[in-house]
Amino acid sequence: MAKASDLFIEALESEGVEYVFGIPGEENLDFLDSLSRSASIRLILTRHEQAAGFMAATYGRFTGKAGVCLSTLGPGATNLVTAAAYATLGGMPMLMITGQKPIKKSKQGRFQILDVVDMMGPITKYTHQLASADNLPSRVREAIRVAEEEKPGAVHLELPEDIAAEDSDQRPVPRSYVRRPVAEDKAIRAAIARIEAATAPLLVIGAGANRKLCSKMLTRLVERRGIPFVTTQLGKGVVDEAHPLFMGNAALSAGDFVHRAIGAADCIVNVGHDVVEKPPFFMTPGGAEVIHVSFRPAEVDPVYFPQLEVVGDIANAIWRIKNHLKAQDHWEFGRMMAVKRAHDADLREGADDPRFPVYPQRLVAEVRAAMPRDGIICLDNGVYKIWFARNYLAHQPNTVLLDNALATMGAGLPSAMAAHLVNPERKVMAICGDGGFMMNSQELETAVRLGMNLTCLILNDSAYGMIRWKQAHMGFQDWGLAYDNPDFVKYAESYGASGDRVESAAALAPLLARCLGTPGVHLIDCPVDYSENDEILNRRIAAASAAV
Ligand SMILES: Cc1ncc(C[n+]2csc(CCOP(=O)(O)OP(=O)(O)O)c2C)c(N)n1
Image 1 (cartoon, rainbow, N blue to C red):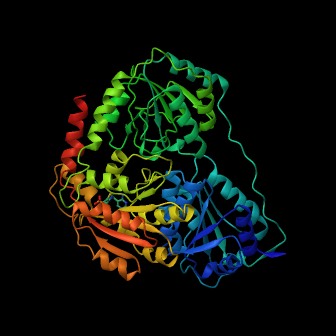
Image 2 (cartoon, rainbow, N blue to C red):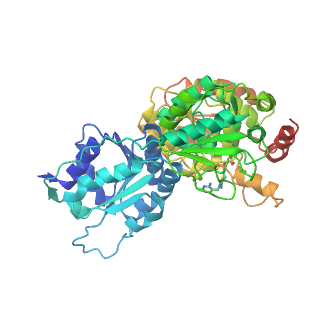
């Protein structure tokens, strides 16, 4: 016989869980006590449940295995809501475990009680209250199976206090060996025929292609068959963006060089398309033909109605296409390459701009120069995300973590902390607006306490810059979006981190080098000038790309 909370931990151990991120409440004390005896699972105690959820989701994003987070009932569980949405929209496997008052007998009325199982319904793939210790092992297995299955996302289990204390003679259900279904031969042959018949085929690499094996297969397809490619924001780095056949990232919705390159294609192989991202291109009747390659069939809408679907495991489909596809003499990429040359020149513009506060182009160039090829940048959500997606070339998958799904603020620092835990030997940088940083800045304490090595770069414009940019663009008056910041240097130091302020554009590079080269948690307060964002992002780029 084992206590249910012990059985829960054993079930998590049998799943290979390494961390439980979170904040326990009194309803989790049996679980916590059982966790204290685990030899393989470590508790990462955080300062906010939302941050714990962002960390668990990011762990899932890196490993493909469900990251686990923990909270109490009511207020702890509501704090997990944003992270659940982040994981589900972003395709990151995550298991949330929340406590609850006893369900069989309770004398506490409705104190702190919410229907958490129902609350999690719209934002998870599975949500369930454990009502018996005997069912616990199969429920844990099922929850994790669902979280990790394509498209990955958040799942939720509620463990009430009295169930946690029950005894059971059940054992954990072992993980099963699962293979994803693969596409039919006919679909693969049809795709090959269409790509071979095209004049200018192009690969568009999206969120669903950001999986371990896909990256390898897509790189081979690009290299061996010489097909150009573009990436979406969540597809960044799946194939090395420094490759001569890289045509750009769909950071802006329209009017950029990348859209000119897409316009030059007559057959688009759209790999891992996820409707959660704004469409990287709009289909038009009579326009380029589209082949949809994904785990799931295409969701059709007015601008997306692919003529051919290759549905099944993406890596397998690309591998088979690559094996049988023959590069064609009639393929003609002259137009795309002309766009690429103009695009490359545009990306170099402003990289050495001496003005201060620092301009976004210089900032991106400095961070790229400071980060090794396998270094990981974790972006919070703000206007700089567009600049990084567009101008920062990612060399490897998951080296640019950004959220182009829920697009929430507050995930920059927690996701960097998880990135460090999963990749302790690599350089990790959180890049946050002053607004987004302050939404989870308390986790500096967690990072310092756990002896993490990471640098947090704060882009300081004393405003919610992204909204200010949209406000200006839409012709509204500049109102309601500015604030004052704390002294970030002192703030960092009060947590036991190092704090530095950038005083000139030239000072940024040596400071980045010093922080990245020194163990510990570092915070850099970098004043930025966004005054030209509207002019550049909305007009100058569109004019320059239209001229090619
Ligand atoms: C949790 C959350 N609240 C509000 C928003 C809307 N929003 C998007 S970007 C942004 C401003 C971000 O400001 P900051 O972090 O300072 O970055 P900046 O754009 O100034 O570089 C806001 C308010 C959001 N995406 N997420």
